[in-house]
Image (tube, rainbow, N blue to C red; front, side):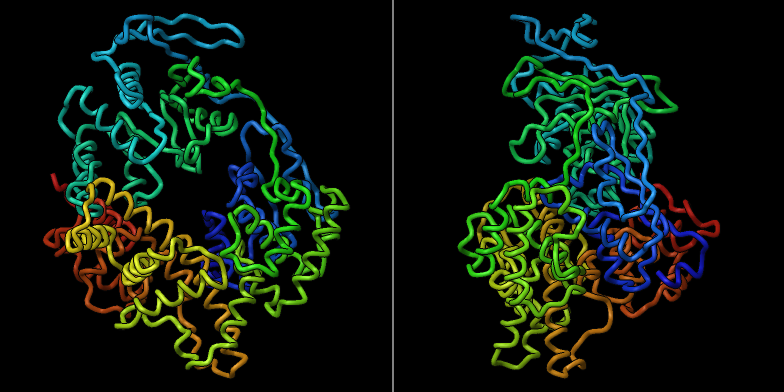
Length: 638
């Protein structure tokens, strides 16, 4: 980051809260931020990641006393709540506006009695309903998925239509149904290129590919980022006419539409979507500068199972920090802290309920010596704070882990790290056996299995159930080795065939992508980074600094799925992992820096068309590594 600041006057980083912590860990004292803009700031109230977001904001503020901080949150009832933790003497101001950028029509649709192919449409205007007409479906929608697909295809025939699905599998099925209902037209070259990328980058039989060729797509969080971004780009351009999405669309994806179709939206498994998230989602309807209005079509508004509280009214909604919501449960959090200090984690029914906030409070206590003077104390009952203070003070006497290590690992308990440190100190074998092995070494898999078990026992039961720890370790090793997603899926298929396990290909593809996202890119970086930091602390105490790897930290390697210098250099140059891995498979050396990578691409540019690389990947390679006129030189694969 220091080099970056010297090279250009201004640099803009777009980060999740987890990546912001990762950046701060990587650059240390060079973590200098002038302006921090927190979009979707109400997410500070989320159950798990909200605490990580709050911690990231506070960490940036502590490291940058002159930081300017801007919160953006739609339809917020109490925006001033976001300013409650501002440093004393800081200038604060809140600005509120209800002026919409486009006109949004909330339309409800219900079946005409006794006629399943006829559905009446009505616009909700305050307390009244304005009849709009009747839409006729080509077939009777005999299932919930068919209702969404048939009504979307009929009402959104102009294109620019988003359909909300309550899961990845549903999104694939609904998109498939829609593709059968719309007229077939010649595929644009860009659609054929994306279909080719889906087949090469995921699997030859990935369901997205043939749908893309029909101008229909689905979108969910575990898909490769390059595939997702191309789906979004082609939807914005109108090449993709129908897009079926999961809740990823309300998790920061900035994608607008002409029409959005929903029925009984859920967020997570079985949880009805709250009004705030519904209107955040519905806010995608309407294209500022392109469309004057957008339509939100809600199916079966009178169905209590689909809409337990009815179709939400437009209103402002309160913000409450996730940490505050847990603290306000009274003695429950303090009781958890007391048990956490004396009880094996395996004996807890649901440690996730309190672990994030407990870890945050303990890190705050270790840094400040108290929470009584922290900004959060003024928002809570003094008796509650006093009880928490006593519990934290008791735990702090047991901890040698310093506040700096605690701050580096938000959501990981300093008490858990202390338990891990104690286990290291009591280990009777060769200390080198505690280290992760180089990912290309023959024993790397066995080491990761052992380390994962150790994390579950002492740090936190993050990799459960225990019987699939070997699978989790295998996913981590393959990811670090730079395996492409398609290669990992093929390996998973081979494993199921070799062991005689039955499988359904679409389910196996989705489950592999989910394991990569949840295990390799989320849990493994979080807990393995803490493991290595605590181990390094132990090695320093033993005088074995020679065993500390001073190269790329394990968190960065896992976040991007790299272990070689060449692959990391390609990602540092701006390539998506899909493109970086595809290019890395053609490069012999694994020790190239960024300049070396650019030189290699220049030397081999004329040979790329013969290397069976997707045209989309070639465009990205040339745009990022050969920006002086070669961008866009990739030929179409159609």
